[in-house]
Amino acid sequence: MPLDQLHEVERQAKEKGEMSFFEHISELRKHILRAALAIMTIFIVAFINIKYIFEVWILGPKNTWFPTYRILCDLSEKLHMGKSMCFEPTAFELDTREMGEILMQYIYVSFWLGIICAFPYILWEIWRFVSPGLHESERKAAKGVIVICTLLFFLGVLFGYFIIAPFSISFLTSIQVEGVKVSPTLDSYVTYMTMFTLPTGLIFEMPVAAYFLAKIGVLGPAVMRTYRRHAVVVLLIIAAIITPPDVVSQTLVAIPLYILYELSIMVTARVAKERAKAIAANNDSLPALLDDE
Image (tube, rainbow, N blue to C red):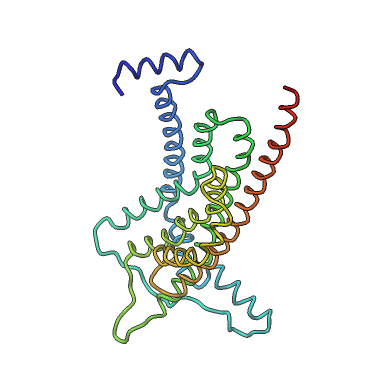
C-alpha cells in the first residue's frame, strides 16, 4: 500500500476512535519489551543461583535420591510388590569437551528458566494486546484462558521433569556395552532435559488450541473422531521427535498426548453444542421479528 494511502487509512481510523497501524506497532513493542524484561529478570535471578539450580534441579534426575525413584519404590513396598517398581539410573559422570561449556550451559539453562517461569506473564501481555480488539462476547468466552493455559503448561513441564526425565535417563544409562564407559557431555544432558520439559509443556496446550479452533469453526468433534487413528500416528511421531530414540520415553509421552487429544474432542463437542444452541435461539427469534414488522 502506498504511503499516502496508509496515512489516509490512519486518519480515518483516528476519526473513528481506532488505533492506527503505527500505534498498534508501538503498543506491540511495549508489550514485547515488558515480556522481555520479565524474562531477563528471572534470567538474572536464575544465573545468580545457577549452581544450586544445577546441583539440585538439573542434575537431580541422574541421582538416586530423586523423588520419582523414591516414591515409586515406596509405593511398590506398600502395595506388597517388593521392589518390582523400583528403578534408578546407572551411575555416570558428565564430561565437558570444550572451554566455556559450563558457562554456556549456565546461560542456556538460565534463559529457558526465564521463559518457563515468565510464561504466565507473557500470556498476560499477549492478552492485554489482543483483548481491546475483541468483542465483549469474545472476551467473556476467553475468560480464564490465561489461568488454564498456565496450569496446562506447568503441568506439562512437571510431567516431563518428574516422569519422562527419570524414566528416560534410567533407560538410556542402562544400555551398556562392555569396554565402553558411559560419560555423556554436559551439553547433551542439558539438551535432553530441555527436550523433556519445554516441548511437553507446550504440547499440553492442545485442549486450548482445540477450543479456539472450534470457536472460529475450523475444527469440530466429528472431524477429530473421524481422524482419530491418523491423529494417533501423528502423536507417536511427535513423541518420537521430542524424546530420545527409545520406546519407553515415546510411550510415556504418547499416552498423555492421546488423553489430551480425547480431552480436546470433549472441548470441541462442548463448543459445537453451545454454537448449535445459539443458532437455534437466533432461528427462534427470527419469526418473532418478522411478525413485528
